[in-house]
Image 1: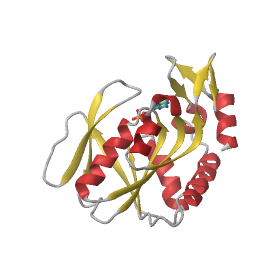
Image 2: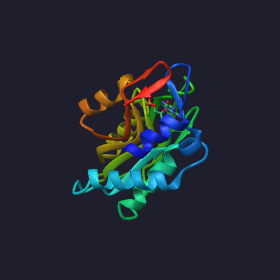
Image 3: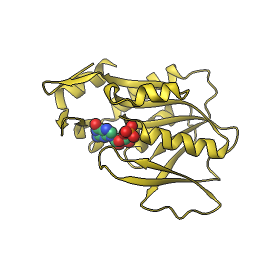
Image 4: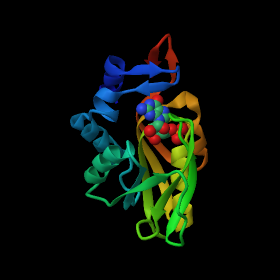
Length: 189
Ligand code: 5GP
């Protein structure tokens, strides 16, 4: 989407050669209008696929998922919680994910009340990099007997492998902006 690409070019900063900092509109201050326009694009893309639930991961996925849940008709939104070591009980689904930005592993959990067999799930997040977060959310769906249909992310870094791996795993992947490379400090689309 042109408006997201323009914002990335105007405000984005590349850290450590592979992380894009977009605090001015997504990860610290949130531009609600941009988020709403993205959510409309997601709604159009996934129309007719019978999606009944939006699933994300705390913290930065929540705002993006909220905009999508609202645009798609006030769908229920569930966010997986992160913990260093999950208190695994019979009432939670759990999966391990690797944090791209922090370089550490953590467990994510969702209570079994909120993800159930028959759910047709759209996974949402702010960024897609190597795909660990989305794969972890897919594993939670599998444990629940829910079907992950697609992944909607505001920004994907296509060169970090997540997109291809998730398409191969059967997800329909939609990105508001798709970065093919960082070249001389400038994101390429
Ligand atoms: P993945 O699990 O796909 O490797 O990474 C996606 C997760 O890591 C997202 O939830 C996002 O919060 C974080 N992330 C990955 N790359 C970036 C990036 O370039 N910028 C920011 N702000 N977050 C990122």
